[in-house]
Amino acid sequence: MPDKFYQPSLFNGAEGEGQAAAETPDWFTRAWEDTGSAADKPQPAQAAGFAPALSGHRQTGKEIRPRVDAGDTLAVLAAEAEGCRNCRLRAGCRGVVFGDGIPTARLLLVGEGPGETEDRLGRPFVGKAGQLLDKILAAAGLPRASVYIANIVKCRPPANRLPQPDEVAACLPLLEQQIAIIRPDIIVCLGALATQTLIDPDARITKVRGRVFEKAGRKLIPTFHPAALLRDESKKRPVWEDFKLIRDLYNALPDR
Image (cartoon, rainbow, N blue to C red):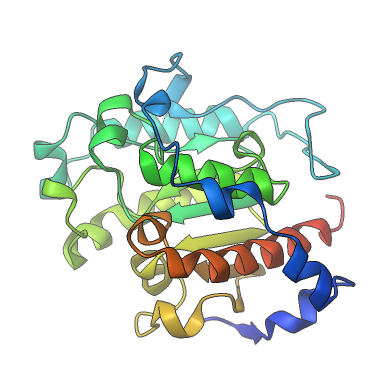
């Protein structure tokens, strides 16, 4: 269970209702028109599936101060994950999809598990749902290059089914170690499984999305998984409201 719960209105800053209504990003109206195959093209290889720390890189006015050991430590953990056989998933997938992004990112997004495209390319969120997530992040001023993205399980479940409880339990220690190494200030739970795993096993995503929970000194915000938006366009508006909240929380972070 979370240590604390906050009402979202406490974090909306000076943004008024009129401004919020007018602030409709391009992805909100056109994101479903061009979820093409660009992400299906092989990407340049990156060690352990994540980008190196970028000295002096700035994200939404926040300077990332790389810890020299974070990337190396994640690389060691990724190598260990490649040899994991703690559940049945590894036997049925091409490889481990460890994570992608800045090893010292202050914002971590967590989904449920890799799909077919992610399994093939070895990176999380690079299929149609991932392309939509990229657009949402960019519209919120939080480009993918400034965050870290991971999943509850690192191996693709058969036919993209939801991971089963024993598979989640077997893989969760890897995510917990990623969190300990990256030390994010904010964790976004993408979908019901991530929310129930990281916040509350009884949580219902339709009831808790857009709320801010605090656990172990970190803020956790649940929202719908991008794949849900591809199935149901009515979820676009609440997700955009959630990401404006996430942006405001991020902008309010003190410098490390």
